[in-house]
Image 1 (cartoon, rainbow, N blue to C red):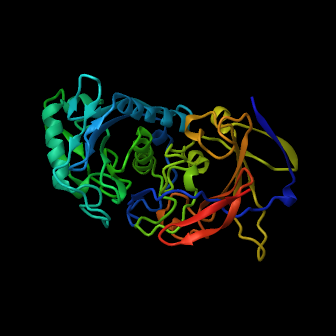
Image 2 (cartoon, helix red, strand yellow; image 1 turned 180 degrees about the vertical axis):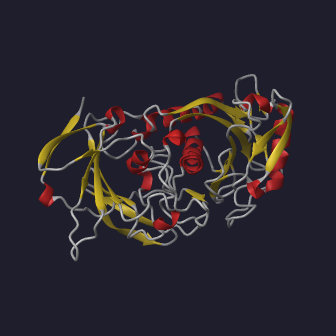
Image 3 (tube, rainbow, N blue to C red; image 1 turned 60 degrees about the vertical axis):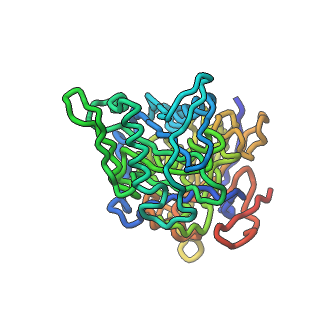
Length: 406
């Protein structure tokens, strides 16, 4: 097993500048910053060790090609591996189903086609992803074609988690997503539970972390990885109470935070392959247990994905010379994990390990959405990625972007 040996001298440990990756504009996610969960208590263990099910309704915008290959549909199932990997087996996706309008003899499928086109650059509201009337029309078709009791796996009268996914739309239109369904609709199907009650699709909690039975999202998804990336982002809100880390709930994105190294940032991963949730959120969820560095010592770092190893060090408070309450984390990666395959640390396919330095500002609640509105004083950051540090902003328009410097 590859390892990195580091000699830690506590008196000389200092911060690097924040690192960002230059990427294309990703997905616009809305999460209400004023909701009651905007200052939540830490997640409970019962919330983050669980079995889940996912039911996708695959759609395209009016006028877009409806055909998707059998391989494309099969690869959406990799989302189960994502949650197994990010949680070290604590989160299990038992069933991943993709509901479509038709299945062809060659195994390819035809997606449901919306009855109209989508708003190009919507503000948050009923048209933010897909208008509620178009959603109802598609759900009517789904209800006619499928027995939706098959997707109420615990027989509680509600489809476990429905993901309304528009995978193809015109060039130039924003990808958008949010928990819930527009108008917080609750759709009553014609199918019934074992006790005779009608099965519901529960889209309540639209735009908030209170929505835990449905998502709605759209993205120009040329591969299944695009669908997985936006879905794990929105499920991070709905299932685990994670905030957006690049904005405070509106469309005013002013920085990339973790860039492509974390799926709760508004990106799509390297080469559109979603990255795992950042290790600080994974610690918050009890999926990782960090090891404290307390003295000058030599430590051996091993790949976090295969060993779950992560070290931390609390920077001593020095009033008047430094901001107190700062903690750094050290992790390394071998890129043998599917979700880190295209990370720039180390070069893909090499046998080396890449070192990451993460920072947590412990003065701020990491789950409070409003705390991410000031990128210069945020709860979490990357300080260094395999010795790459912040160079300078390339431009300062809608998204601030940054270059690597080694």
